[in-house]
Image (cartoon, rainbow, N blue to C red; front, side, top):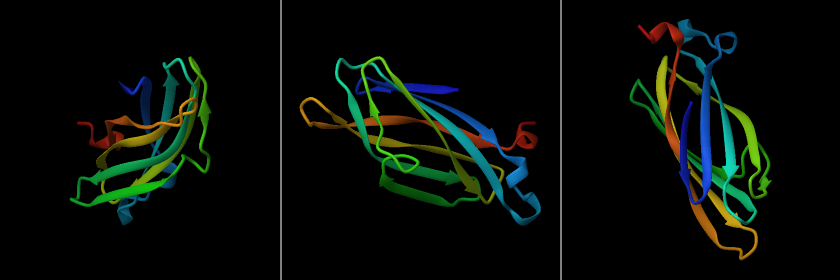
Length: 128
């Protein structure tokens, strides 16, 4: 697990290779990741949007921008956490992701950026 704190929000990431949804013969490798956001601020925050940078070891780079996460814009109260699971498919057995969330301070309506730490995606058979 990797973690990073920025803007008073701790973002932690765990990754999982999904062999049941992968087909290595056809160059299809599916990964899941679990994100935990912990609001260490004295005010509630609302996650407005996400911006991902995805790198595949075959040289492909993708950017994904969108509202909220997994179809919601969660409100996270002080000292509370929000967790979700999502996925990423690659054309090779290794890659990495990182990005940012845009978050709103619900009290004063200011918007700020929260960093998502860089994390590796790798199929277990590539670990050696």
